[in-house]
Length: 179
Image (cartoon, rainbow, N blue to C red):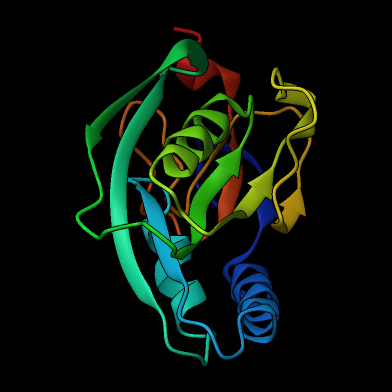
C-alpha cells in the first residue's frame, strides 16, 4: 500500500475475480449476440481490458470520453469530448464504467444512446457508490462491488489525473485532496 492511501478496498486479485464473474454473466446474457462494449474514458480502461479477457462471445469495443468531475466533486454537467465511431442502430450496448457515483454521466449517456436507436443498453461497472447517487432509480446492471461514500483511486480511478495506474482500488487520504 502507498503512503497516500488510507485503506485498500479491492486488491488486484479481487478485481480480476470481479471481472471474471461479470464477464461470465455477460457471456451468458448475450449468448448468440454480438454486444458493443463502450468504455468511458479514461477510467474504464483497466477494468474494460480485464473484463474483455473473460467474455467468451463475439463482441466489439468502442470508446467515449465524457466528464462530469472537477477534483473530487461532480460538476453537475456532462461533457462529451470523444464520441463513438461505431453505428449504434439496433446494437446491444454495454456501457463499461469504472465507478457509478452520482449517476449523472450514465443517465446522460444512456439517453444519448437511446436517441441513437441502440437496441438495448446495459451498464457494467467495477464500483457502485449508491450513497453518492443524485439520479433516482439508476442501478447498474453488472456491479463489481458496492463501496461506501469515500473518495477512491486506482485501477483507472483518478484524482486530478493521478493514481490511475495503481493495481488496486484504495481510499485516497483526505490530506491529498484537501490542501
